[in-house]
Length: 147
Image 1 (cartoon, helix red, strand yellow):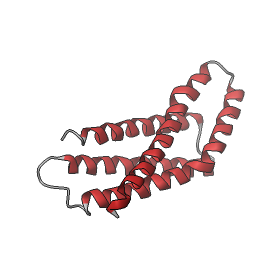
Image 2 (tube, rainbow, N blue to C red):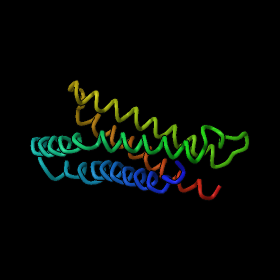
Image 3 (cartoon, rainbow, N blue to C red):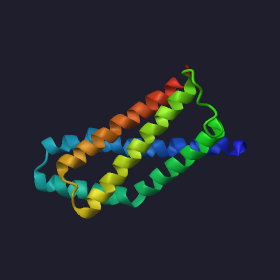
């Protein structure tokens, strides 16, 4: 499996870029449109964006987590990299915990959307929380190179 590591890593990074990019777009671009356009138009724009995102994002998130599991297994050999002393293994474990938090928020948002409970306020806060968690994951991933 270790021979597949570079391809799995490429898949993982590609999915992460798509996921983080979509959330960045929604938080940094789409939210700014609320100040420029009326409420009815923004509801239609957000509905169109979300319809498109719902088609591919579940597959992207699934591939992101499956590739993450594979990378964790290859790199850490189960939980062998977690040692009592602080090191990159603990950063990896924290990164995985944050990733599961993102997954929980993502699944909660999908369920709320399917049940009609995704109001504009919850929509904004959900995306802001996911963006903050994803930035933390990226920072932890880079810190792992220096510990």
